[in-house]
Structure formats: structure tokens, C-alpha cells
Image (cartoon, rainbow, N blue to C red; front, side):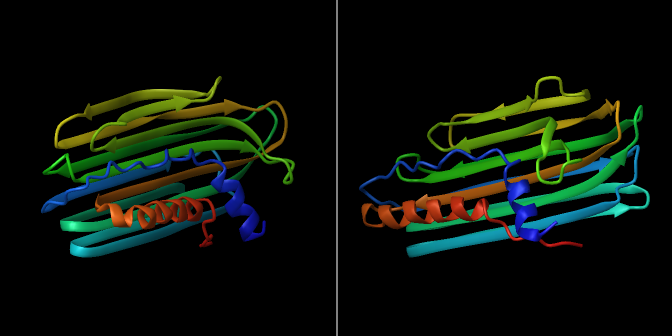
Length: 273
């Protein structure tokens, strides 16, 4: 499958992260901010060996400072071992800053894809382990902004017709921690999803100058097919951290930077291993 087409297919499985909204203050003060977003996924004990597999990683950072210091750090790794089949990926983004006028964004992306073939009457199954960890810290809520958000998404497609993928099952973990509000942590699955969750934990600490959200789940997926079927399993994640203490003069630049980052997240390059 051409790389561009594959990237477009995978991009559609990612739940868009809500637009970021900064509350700007007219009077700057010395500020210290921190945001961190991290997720990891392990998939193993597959019932079938994949006949093809691919991994995707990408990172992006953007910093701006006229009066202060800002750092943005990212990391993304992904692997899919075929004998015996197992997949792992993780992505991490953090940003921190001090000063009167700065902004920084760290964005990381990682994903794995496996193609499988099952015969009539066979059951396709695998185990999974997924974690999402979001943290923000600010000193002055009147002038500082810190945002950590992330999404982990699983999707299983019937790809017997390579030109028309049919979504069979999916589930998503998503969260957002924002200084000043708009906090959430969710777990959602498709209707009829064949999930058997042995453990799911959603822990939040919202409000105040130190906020966090932690999601952890593990379980077993199983689905039986009544005909020969080609399957594609796609697991992708995106983690983003943003800190800012902007003055009114940089509002336009900040907003344009956010839109540019959002567009880039939907046009990832693909690395095949």
C-alpha cells in the first residue's frame, strides 16, 4: 500500500484533540510552567501471525521567547516483532518555561499496524496494555498557561477490500489537563466491541495549580469470523504539551502556531520497518 494512502488511513483513526484555548493576561509577571504528556501501549499473545506490519513515529517541537526561557522535549518509539508477534510503542512530550513572554509546544506521535488473515470459523485475539499520563504545573493562574493532552486509539478493520476498509471494533483513551479548566479523562469503545477488560483505572486530580490525569487499562480482545477475512489492526497515539505566558502582542502568532501544529498532526510521514 502506498505510504501516503496508509498515512491517511491511520490518521482517520486518531480522535482529534480539542483545540487549545489560551487565557491571555495583559500584565506580564515572572512565571514558571510545566506540562507533560506520556503514553505507552503493549500488544501481545496474538492468535495469528501478521503477514505484514509497519510502525510509525514522529515528533515536533516549537518554542518562542522574547523575555524568558522555554524548553520542549519529545520522544517516540515503536516496534512490531513478528516471531512471536508482539507490538510496543510509546510517545512522550514535555514543555517548561520561565519568564514574562514565551510559548513552547512538544508533540509526539507513535503507532503500529499489523495485517492478518483469518479463515472461516477462526477467532482473532490479542492481549493489550495501555497507559496515559498527563501532568501540568503553574505558579500564577492569572498569567500562566499549561496544557497536556493525549489520545490512545485502537481500531480493527476488515480490509478484505483494500479500497474500502470497514471498521469492526475500536476503543479510545483520551484526556486533557488545562490550567483554568477544560479538564477531562475518558475511555470509549465502539458498540459491540469484543473487549474483555481485566482492569481499567481512571484517576484525576483537577483544579488548582498542580493537575494530573492517569488512565491505565489491560485486557483481552477476541472476535470470531464466519468467512475468510483480511484484518488490519491499527494502534496510534499522540501526546502534546504546551506552556505559554504570552503578552497581547503575540496572540496572533500563538494561534497561528496552534493551527499549523493541528494540520501537521493529520499529515504524518510514514516510516516502514
